[in-house]
Image (cartoon, rainbow, N blue to C red; front, side, top):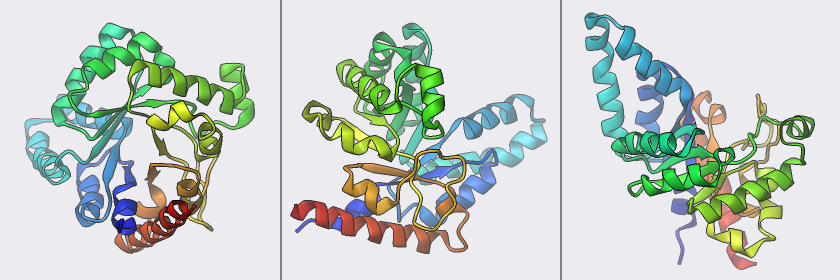
Length: 256
């Protein structure tokens, strides 16, 4: 009998959107046994670089233990969200450095092209490479302005390119999940979806959103959820409630 609740917990990726290692530690410590991974984005990584380069010896001595403890607790349960997008040689070399911390997932941008994604995959060292398609903050008019095509059409194109390049999955809006499911060859890709908001919560800067239940029913494999969990009065209780909602969707999907 499948453990739907455990599958749901493992499918939650908590977005740690902060430049403060102490605050990141406060977010991760209580949640680490209740979710599958934590997304560390550009704000976190760039601030860490600046802290080490610009901080005084006293400053470094103060914040370095927080970083060490954080990564000890995470123990590979990270989604390193760099969205790498450069020439293939740089993509490969950057990926080699990113994987030194053994992330569970790392992101590249599908717009980097086939050769760039292939270079990242070659250096992934066991981490799952996810190709970012169209950002969830994009409304439809912005997708047209940027890509000259509807967001759904562009996501399908990016997903096909990612599959051919050997990526393990894609990052897309939950709004694209159902149309992606119509292409059997794309079922090999993990679908990781930001833009997930529990019913009744503010969608923030996300343009295309869906509830956790609906995202799982639409064939998402992992949900990236940030402020609805991290800003909640009780983040652990909120994560548990979301996992229970997702578990119902997993069970119902299995019965179809």
